Image (cartoon, rainbow, N blue to C red):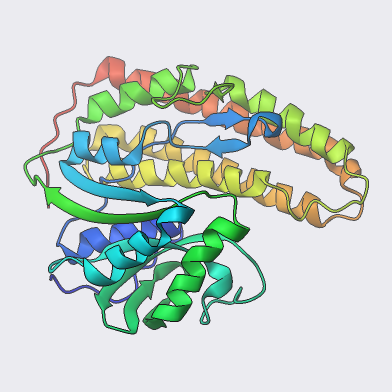
Length: 331
């Protein structure tokens, strides 16, 4: 197994992405061209809330563009024993794996026995009564007992909205495969102009048109809040995900070191900043004793973000129109 630091840190990746990044790095695979989906997909709460930057299934995307075959198995509550058997009896001889758990049952986690939440971490080694893990989101490298792991896996079914646990490993890598930059950019133009996502999501709105819908629904949630407490606001995490997706594109495009991409890179950076400010503003609204007094400023923040995204779309179209990008890999 290629050596790598026990803990991988990146403020722009969630727990699942951090785990996959570490798994790839341990195999000596560079990750700056792995995440490159900066769309906008939204579905309102009454249909099942979704607010994300990605618009394609990640596994399909990295297989098609990067030649990385990430295998994934889903385990329902009735298959908990099969899940544990997979973790403890079928650990790969080479490489590491990703497993899902509930943070409530993780003794090292600050939310231990305080808060439930679906979570992903990396299993490096397996022993009879414990595993050696790297939980990159919480910067923990050490052991986790079999008892705690089983409790945490069972708790996913009992105390989170998820109906399955997920086990992932890297099955195969074709190092000759490289992303087609022009195709990636064209996909972004399509999704920002309102094309449907590449997965089934009935009731979803995409692209720039989604911003006004999110704004309307969010402000309605402020108006309908009787207690002046929006701490559990689902919008913050969604807006942060969209923001981070723009930073992923900054990383992706910067890896090509092409001067004519700089204006587009800056446009994605500006979009990242704008979505981040918007997300943080919703957190402030959630802490406010009088959130309704912040409705006008909330509307202004959404409008500013729409302007920045409109500029980003214009920049994307200009690059596609003016440049025929080549994609040699400079490792």
